[in-house]
Length: 303
Image: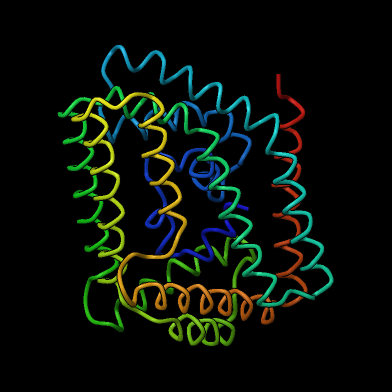
């Protein structure tokens, strides 16, 4: 499931999500080509390190943040992983029947976004406590981390002319497609590259939207800190932030680009599926089954 999200948001990924709230799905995505089970079993530690890299938790925060993360993982393991397995099983059946459509892929994308939003809402009480505990220097650390990430985005995604940027985007997409389907022939790669380049390209717009949402996060936590908001008021602020992160862009004209990009990426994924031969599809079906088995096994171990 998490890799479905990667395919649809090769550039967007975390860019359009609330950074402090993108919790469990981040851990699953981090598994990459390695075992989801291995990564998930260490997910609480990985999430803690990720969060600490943004706000530099103090000694008091560390204890209860670790407890909150542990409780969130327990809930997630008990209630969500079997659902993930069912989601993947449905996609697996579509691939086996060779009946995947662009509408199916777009529906899967919307489904993943709904699951992500539901996860954030579940984490809202914990995020509220964290936001209320942040100190000005921790918010400054978060701002610096955002700036560092944006510099990395520029270096990777905005290097060279449009042709070089398309090449980088294509290479990142191929990493995911090869994870799913294995290697491709030169003829297949040529057609995949054509479908990849057909997507709109505007990395400055991606960066602008990314920074707008980052600034919204900073403004929210600064409001909580400076006005010393109580739990109810802080929850309302963060809920609005989460809803905004899943809503249309507030910049005029941006949403049309994002919609076009989403549709173009769905078409790219469909192109790969249609090009895949029996051996490549079997590779994808087996990988899906491995994830399904991992999710079911992890859920069965829930306390």
